Image (cartoon, rainbow, N blue to C red; front, side, top):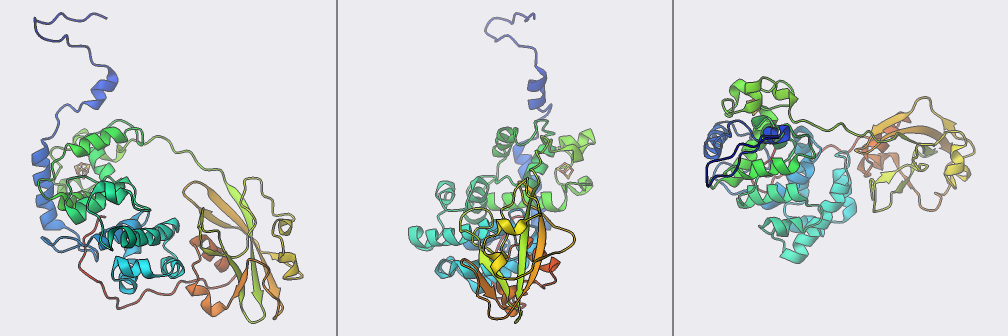
Length: 401
Ligand code: SF4
C-alpha cells in the first residue's frame, strides 16, 4: 500500500477502509437544524395520551415511569386501559408502594411480561423508602431503582426532568438508523447509534425532543411504508435519499429459541372450582397463578405426563388429554402445552402447594396469557375483569410512544 507524502505539518491521509467509509456519512445533517425541525413538527402534531402532560407543563415522574414500564414490549392501545386502572387504584407512587403485590399482579393480569409488575411494585417501595416517595431526577439515581434500565432511566430523566439525554427505544432506533443510513447491524451497532443520538441537541427541551422522536417513529417513520413526504427530516434523511428506508435498521439474524413442551392439568371440581397454584416468586412468570403443569423442556413427551406431576393422580381417577396443543411464544423460546382435564368429585382437598379457585373468581386471578390460553382450551372463560370504565387520572401526563 502506498501512502502519499503530505505537505510538512500535515498528517498523511490513509486510504479509507470499507468499514470506515460506512461509519462516516457523506454529509452529516446539522444537529441544530434537525432539532429545530423535529420540535416544530412536534408542536403541531404531538399525540395526546393519558400520561402525557399538556404543552408547556412539566410531566409527572410517576406517570412517566408507570407508562414507560407498561409500554415495554406492549402497544399504546393495550396500555391505555391498564394505565387508567392503575392510576385510579394507585394515584401516587406511595399508594402503589403500600399495596400488596398480589393486588398489583391482579390488575396487571393480561398485560404480559409479569416480571415488570413485580419490579414495578419493588420500585415503588424503593422510591417510598429511599427517596421519601419522590422520584429522583438523575439518570444514575433512577438507574439504581429496581426494574429501571438504561432506556427507562433516560426516558424518565428526559421527559420528567428535562435532563438532556436521548432515550433510544425501538422507534428511536429506527428513526436514527434511517436518518444516518447506519450500515452497522444491531445490536452490535448500538454504541455508534448512541454516539449519533448524543450528537443531537435537545435545545433546552429534552423531554419534548425525546417524545418527538418517539412520536415520529410511531406515526411517520413506521417499520413498513414510512410516510417520508410528511417527515420533518425528509430532506436530510440518508435512507430516504437512497430510496430504501425500510432496509433500516440493519439487524443481525435472530437466534430462535428451542421449542419447549409440557403438560398442563385443568381439574374442575363438582362445584365448578378450578385447581391452581402460584408460581415461584423468582423466574419466568414469577408469582403468577397457573394450573399445575409439568416442567417445560425440549424433550418432553405427553406419554405418562402424570408421572411428571406428583399428587395429581390422587386428585382425580381419570385424566383425559384434549386434542391439539396450546402454543405460546416467550421472548426466548416457543412453548407447546398438552392440556389434560379431569372432573373431580366435590369435597376433594387440594394437594400441597395448590388451591381451589371458584369459577367466579378466575377473572380476578393473576393468570398470565399462556394460562388463559390453557383455560380457554379447556372450555373455561379466563377473561380478566374489565378496566374501570370511568377511571380517575391523577394528573395530566406525557408519554413516549
Ligand atoms: S424521511 Fe422517511 S425514513 Fe427518513 S426519518 Fe423520515 S420517515 Fe423515516
